Length: 297
Length: 339
Image (cartoon, rainbow over all chains, first blue to last red; front, side):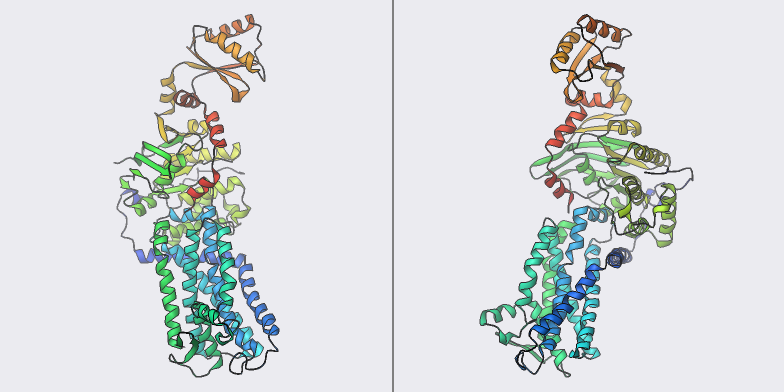
């Protein structure tokens, strides 16, 4: 340590009088919650700004998928994907969803590192209005990140000739991404507090990641799959995010009753898809409550 | 007015391993209380319960009469905690870290900015404030951590091993700062396994061993209770055990020697407890000379806190430290630390 500490510059290091009087001000819980959540979110964005590699990789990866995977199936017979889509056009919706999914799946990693390095303890000894601010900050951050990535893919996709959904369509895409990301982020945070360390968390992410992609309609339509995979894919929440977005790309006219998917168990409308995603997010957010309560109580 | 910290019958186990058993002590307002003990004695567990990071199995902890268990949030407002492992976000600058800390303690922005300026000034951190904490030296990290712990002007500053891993110069700087802090009215509770640290700083000391507080009082009270002077005798720079034991037997027979122990961890030097007398050193010299044994070094002193520890546990703090180090379970420790 260099230099000396000079306390002669007399300053007030005394315990504040407010606390001393043992009469805490009637604090506004909501204002406190917002203050701490914003501060924690700001920290994540400062990290992102100084270490943008996650964001860059998160944008580049799906673009590579789009270009390479699209090229791989470029010569597939027209109409194979249903309708008269090129494979590139077909793939766009799948990649938008997959990118958001992977980002959300990784949401727990920074929190896990905070657990391991003791930074979480710094947060837990602070008089937070609610410790859910820690979770909320992660969710806000990941949702924002997903929106940035989604916008990039939609942009590139448009440049590659896939067209651009209407403004309302874009709004619905945002809603779909929001619901999916909330649900998956909850899962990831649940895993973060259930698993002992980042190695285990990364292993789980690694294992879950590609199978969920392949067992969805991201890369091929349901009609293309054998029966058992159709069943799996129609249980996969990713499918219910992909299909409505794909529908938006391919149809200028749509409403909540538009049929977006022919699942083994029946037809799925636009509205049903949204309801399923909402249910998924609600389910995972509810499912992790006991764990978060135990760990953050 | 209630004491700054009151801990009563605190017990905490991790699994079947008891970490703290029935610990009770009080910290008076404006004092520095030192919790002294080897690694694994239960210091950190006690602190963790106090700072609401761990839930005690039984017992109570009050900060100025506010129950930590019943009103954790009110208690947290009154505690400034400086952990043993400095956990800084290395991507943030010092100032950004303090701004985050201020928001977590709900300090209004304008006031936070002023307090940060003052603390940066007092802790001589100005020139580093806008550098990333990842580039800081150990001493700098400790200082920014101190600043973070003090930002909300806590009633009680809790420091877990405040100078572990620091060089001597940095330690003295921290010590001076803590003394100044006490002078300005802050109550300080610190843990340490450094005797000299506790001796130099603490108004009162609790010695903790295997989860139990085995002695408590002011440093001079504890030392005076022991009675007798301490003599450390080194026959050679590295004394063979046989020679040390021969001397031990011979010196034990001297009338003023109350106790003679061979300290294997200090090159078989002899630790004697003697009834204070002017001729003690000379008598020892004479009897060694007559037995044909040389003297490499000999010193007489009043009892130290280490002697207090030795008297209570039958081992020196260093021995306990070494024993603890060999039986440490780092994985279990990490697990206790993580939430």
